[in-house]
Image 1: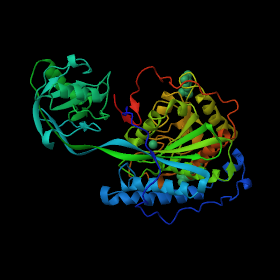
Image 2 (image 1 turned 90 degrees about the vertical axis):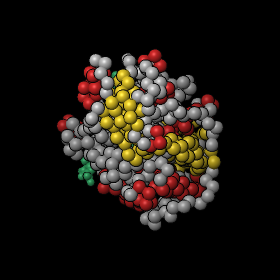
Image 3 (image 1 turned 30 degrees about the vertical axis):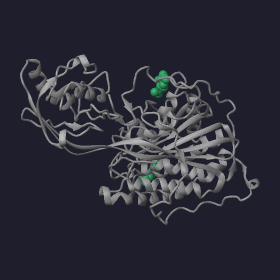
Image 4 (image 1 turned 120 degrees about the vertical axis):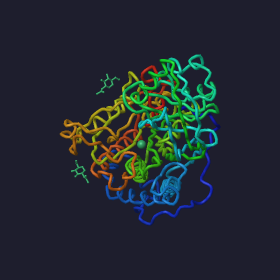
Length: 504
Ligand SMILES: *[C@@H]1O[C@H](CO)[C@@H](O)[C@H](O)[C@H]1NC(C)=O
Ligand SMILES: *[C@@H]1O[C@H](CO)[C@@H](O)[C@H](O)[C@H]1NC(C)=O
Ligand SMILES: [Zn+2]
């Protein structure tokens, strides 16, 4: 999802926060007054300061913050635009602010498109296809009322204007494939359609997003290949199929905020950068996704204040990750080339404490990614090996906030503990937990609360984050110099995913 390039909006926090912070915040450790009391950072010593009790106390505080959304959403959530998310931003800001002048903090506002479908219905002939789902960021049907029209079959994949017949007052019926859903919907609108249905060209239901809105988008549903088959047959025989589409939905642009904290000490021409996302999905409080990464970073940032650093350390808390990596995309898109080159690498920490965890390392190689990504991957391997822990590789395929960095020439990588994927028998032997069950059975659900954390996994993940920060804050010796500002593209073709959202 490409956002318009807007001017850099780095503003310091203005008004006082509206949210009252919970009282149960862990105590901030003793911060040396005189800089001379600080020792030079070292990994073992920083790791020793990671206390799972601190992490757990922070998780409880964050869950309380998520509760501020209950009035509006009927359940705790930290989705962008909610009180729970604003409270999260306040919590992060106040925690870093409380560390004195060790960090320079900034808030970066950016526009984010959010959508909500209140009600929807699709009728084809006289049936309601079971698999029908509204696409993310779909506009409503006209006047948010049902529209009636016969189905208009679109040729090929509906990626070119010439694939579309005149669809005035019709419902476009389009195959998935080749181009984003947003393009298909836009071309359907241009051809006069009142709504669009995209049917899967692979087995199974189709749940995706239209991505950045355009004025020609029409209300769009996804349906399965199976549900589409009988109508496709009729349409190909030249028969008429009537349909009814109803979508009561809104698409809004809101302002949300990234928070960036950079050490005032250290070589500012050579920064190690790391990030986690501050927002959750609408469905739940997101305490593992990515409350865990958010709080790991806060705890490491807090403990780091006991040390001198040689290189600058820059922490980021991204917003809008769940809407399609909006915050990290925005940040990188407005980073001037000379600033881009100062970022030696970016480390992504999303989901650090899954209850049925596996120690996962993004398989980021130098062949497919900016040079340095593989050295980072190998640092993670070394950490697990030297601590006698098993690990596995997972694809580095654009599903989290590293995406904009590697596409813009910045080496990247990271670790995770698993999302909706199912643990195998072999992984059960490697990591414990339960085979046949998701790594995080509460992924993107209401139950992603404080009980959805494994503290053993969280402690190791946070120690590893400490190790990565300490290593590069101390020295980039042996780490490749930055060169290009253009990144390699992973597969030479656009990826189906951007964040967890399917857009093609
Ligand atoms: C890691 O990626 C490389 C290519 O970049 C590939 O050759 C290798 O098989 C991958 N390893 C795993 C375990 O996925
Ligand atoms: C967390 O994982 C460890 C290691 O697999 C396990 O011993 C422990 O019981 C788990 N804790 C919880 C609360 O599930
Ligand atoms: Zn996440």
